[in-house]
Length: 318
Length: 318
Image (cartoon, rainbow over all chains, first blue to last red; front, side, top):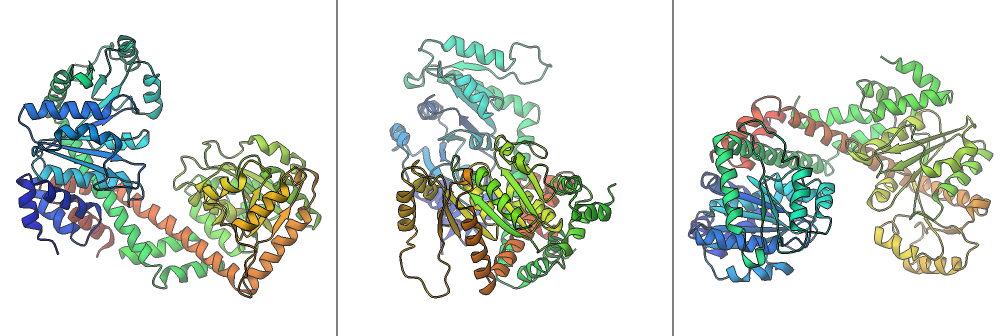
């Protein structure tokens, strides 16, 4: 058995091995999962979680790396969670783009973790929030959550962030791609990366139009900014950080940050509870209860809904 | 409110409108869903459910239509359920290939239903079994369940059939395609359609090899037959029916049919129960319980697992 309090103490000192160990414990649904989660709870809430989404090729990893540098210059401890929903490899797996982050590899103020979710119980909704909790409790002041891949999972990741950054690049019909994937609406901050390329202004204009950013908004509403960057040269990154800080301040002022975090916690509890209840039903395959109900159904003595009622009643006592 | 007993009586007389109405009631999660399911229960169990799967272009619809003709010649009432897991259109929607079935459109002994499952609560696992129950209770002696589309959903459909037919066609690298999709192993009967084309024998041989059909089996084990057909001309269809009847007889002799149906019923109950429990949790969004837990989590006073325990306990009373 792992000495959880000791491990947590080491993680808070910034020891990467302790952080890695804790994430493995919460990722792997270990017997000590609950002990770890309980130990982390009072230490969480300090991190600002930023989600980065966008189609492959827009420069997500480069932008993430540039943001890490910017936050490090400001003296902040940074955690990076690179989530690959399509890969079955997890843990220490170094994703292709991760090598670009190697400049931060020896920095004790930066913790980088690649995470795969395919085949995971509950997938992204289950595993990412737990890893975020570990990084938060370990004292990361900023956590950048970057997805490798596209589509629905990006929306899911974004729903776990305090602030969502949607990245685009000139050309590539990115605006339309992003719109299709349903990620265009989720941005709190938009970044047009590779802005030294032709068409950057057109992409920004197109985005501005698609989002209706030119239209009047109610006073106090958040108007997502569009920031142009050349992440590979670090250009515009300070402006992105500034936009993030503005959004954070706006959320705090309007109670949005607390509300988002409550909603996120509620979803987290819901996912865990549904999984637990499903497991309880699964356990019934071992005993005769479910079999007996199935037998009565095939005999025509019971319909599946009445059977479900009996099953739920036997689980819930009402 | 619908007069359910009257509707069921009409459906048993073979009135297509009554059948359609009943399927709509069970598909749409209407308030009378439970009443309908309870009324159907004692009338079910008489139908032999055959699943047809295979890549697009192998001639699934043509084969289904030819099988309908064969069963009609034998005087049996036939139900056809064409499931399109990718389409949001349901009910009366006539899928492209459905027109080929038009020869059966005026036959009162045949009921044809297209069913879409995208966006459906619980998807295929939830909606197809209910429609099968309606057709079964309505007196269909054979129900052919055909999927439009490929992949995981095919495996799901097959799991709901008494006997699974996997269709292939020469060329197209179908064997490999089917193997990839995971549907190669699920066949109780294999059909190489378009057998008048070059390569039909090679496809049958390849299949025979991939499935290890040439190897010795224990006495009493089912050895899936490979039947060659030209469904468009009705060739080989009687042999398919014969293979199906042999499989059915084998299943009855070895208790496999009852076991498959029990397993199917158990899965059905499980799906309904999980959905019901999930809805109960969902209802909590309305009251303050889940909110209060989320509040305590964001304050660091509680971890999500402990919160889930409280939630489950409040639902289940233990």
